[in-house]
Amino acid sequence: MLRFLQRSQFQGSKTRPRVFSKPFHSFPFLKQEELILKVEPLKRDNEPEDVKRRRLVYQSRKRGILETDLLLSRFAKRYLPTMSMEEMEEYDDLLNELDWDIYYWAVKNYEVTPLPEKWKDSKILTKLQEMSANNEGEILRMPNL
Image 1 (cartoon, helix red, strand yellow):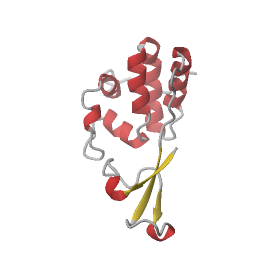
Image 2 (cartoon, helix red, strand yellow):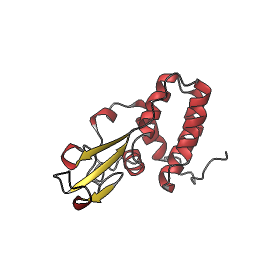
Image 3 (tube, one colour):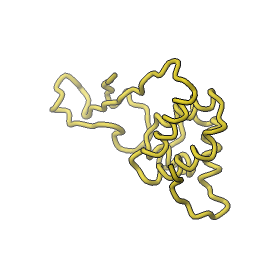
Image 4 (cartoon, one colour):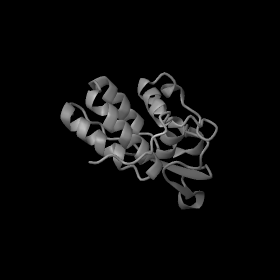
């Protein structure tokens, strides 16, 4: 499902338009300077646990931004096999966020992308932040498929 959001309705980070932006004159029915198009995530009711796990592994690895791919694919390899269905739902919601937002939240750079209220008490994000800190000084590589 596609949804049009006027700039005043958009509640995201301070970064430039998030998913899609087009000049005002292209859409004369709007009164704002910009149009933002947000693609709503698919609803996956009754998705089997094994299918969800495999999908989340794939979505963790194929993000489009190498930095986020690296952090999320390593996170998925380490934690996804033991996640409960509830934790997988929370992780799925996190993966619906934009790549750069996830990256900046994972490295705790809230000046670039402030952390929304809904993620402040997230156990999944806390684990991702702990892993992203790389306190062991490990050289990070993409895990094998």
